[in-house]
Length: 167
Ligand code: UDP
Ligand code: MG
Image (cartoon, rainbow, N blue to C red):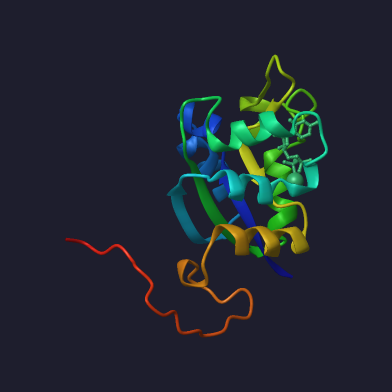
């Protein structure tokens, strides 16, 4: 069954120059990349993305982490992978959430670490299931940024919207 998953290369992954390595590892899955961009993460987006962890003691540190404040790299690379069993395949390659418990050869096992404050810096995000994938992909991407039609869309007229164009 074809699935989509959000992948984020987190700020520690970018700071450690791991983009190439991570994308090479993910290419083993033979999945298709159907969207990709480098972007800044607003506090609102970070909080919404990690809303299931809002009550955890490490939440504030986690928000700083995904916004790049811990690494002075205020950006992430966001991608959507699509294909057969995409979530399972990508989560397997990513490894366990806790990098100490992750398979040493997995992405998180090889490149992750636990900070002194206790946050797991695990270089990559993968959606946990189909429902979360849909929620997250809709949060991080507009429909026209994805080259396949994943979820239903509708047309709407946006009036007097100011958009930036090339000068
Ligand atoms: N996290 C953490 N400590 C924990 C659990 C989670 O620092 O005890 C961080 C870690 O960076 C993780 C993110 O919060 O990737 C989201 O947690 P989740 O439980 O959703 O794990 P994931 O789906 O990323 O494996
Ligand atoms: Mg998760």
